[in-house]
Image 1 (cartoon, helix red, strand yellow):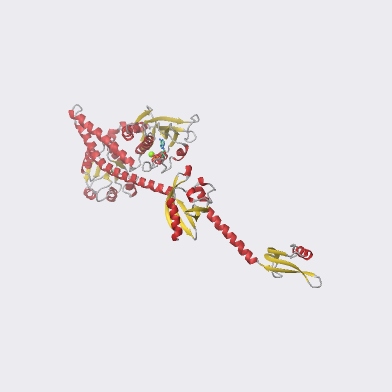
Image 2: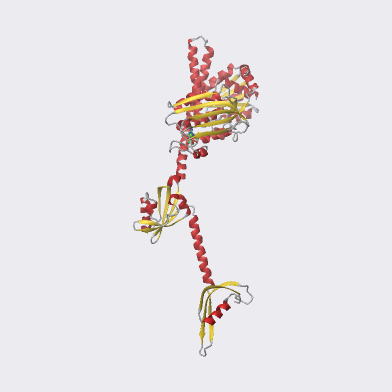
Length: 575
Ligand code: ADP
Ligand code: MG
């Protein structure tokens, strides 16, 4: 104990006679002669006593209390650890003590402060009635938990202040006898909203399926109507009184086909088919549908540049983009207003000020959809493309409209920008890369009729008699030899019995019995290298996924117009 001031202490006691009592004094010592120095704690008493002849001496009594000191330190560390865990627990947690007919907040953790920022840090010591005035039911549950000594679970709503709004929470109330309850409050607001959105999305999906199913059956009928109208028109003199009637049937058929295409676009049941598109034509085709969709309170103005460079995209997807933007415009104009759709070709270069940071240099075809509606603030603008982001009331918005738009635009290598001011309306601009219309394509159109004829032999498999009949008539008109079959088994039998070359099989995709893909596969076993063209009125991802039609197979969507059909046939034969 040398050098630790204990000598001095001893001297002081000897000189003054004041006893010294030390508690838990740290000393450095070795417990055996060879062991290293260690810190021990001792309770010390130095006491001077005088004996009979006036001599004094000091009694030193030391008691090693190291074990108990260490145990106490350990205990307080454990307490701190527990407290830290409580403080950092991600779930808002409150410890209440019963006080007359209410509860006083003893302590709450950091998550609780975040959950109700308006309470600030002054919540401790206050009554639950002050802090959560609307929660009488919860107070009763807390009392029950304590009285019956059971864990109680319940749900509640409270106002989280201007930033957080109304929150829904799930509470677990645990009794801590004799007079306290510990309450965990899990915020379920977001989960409940998500569940509602999911339900809504599922509903949309169901409606989509229904619409897709109807469109499918209609497509078969429209193919028949369209083709027969074409036959009629061909056989009637243009001066004939019936010519006009036949023409009216054909036009109505084309318009109806446009409608089923909308239905399919809506139900997203189209195989993606990028093609060279004229945006003016796309917008022009949609105008009537949009007028009906948006209602009479909204004036639709189109400003189409006389010539807009073409783009490569899927027509039905671009229609979906325009439709979603238009519907949002309508929703933003509850009291009516003007929706303007315009197109133009635009070159982005160094001199273009706006958009140059986002849209890379180049030439674009631009669709602009603007409304005179409520507009949006910066927070909405920052999130509007997020799936499920909606500011509309439950059941009104899915938050999927702009997410779909964004997906399509990206898939088409394009860019979308938004300009909006609260109260001043909104403009969406979709930039799609422009392409040069190739000269070859124009030549193709001119030479069309002679190019789509042929003399090859074609096996035609289609279960719907009317569709089979018009396909057969078109093919015969174009010079082909046609072997019709109404199902897979018949097609295989016909092929087996025919001992000359079959150049092409045209098959419906979905038929009772064998699917189109299966028929073609088995025919190709008989006749290696046989070319195939699939038809279907109902081409959704499901058909692709189940391998009924592979994405690389040649494919024509019903209802088809005669020229599209004969062109597709020629392309497969030549391809
Ligand atoms: P939804 O229309 O189902 O809410 P969207 O993805 O189409 O989902 O739009 C997301 C949100 O973006 C809307 O809820 C709305 O707040 C905002 N928004 C979209 N278009 C407009 C617009 N033209 N004017 C004002 N706000 C809009
Ligand atoms: Mg929308």
